[in-house]
Length: 97
Image 1 (cartoon, rainbow, N blue to C red):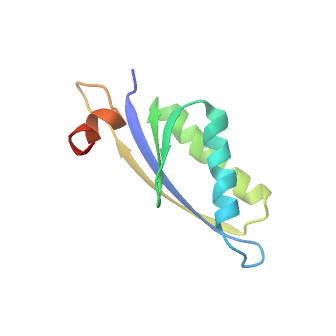
Image 2 (cartoon, one colour):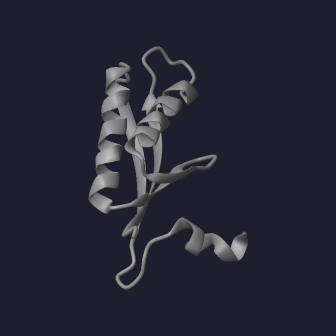
């Protein structure tokens, strides 16, 4: 059962002012390796799972940007949780699908 949804938009300042998309792709690889349910969207990626685990993924994404020599990173994060029910991407969006 997923206790949270976490959306992340990572905005790295690239080392030489190059296109940020390859860097964002590297950040998404971190999510893939975390083996959590996720969905890539045009402006952010949403993950579903244990809140502490998802926040750890975000930390690793930021670390990866620094490993790639990004001097700074902005991470815009949104968190959804519900006291009495599972947090599910499909449940929240089913009326639109």
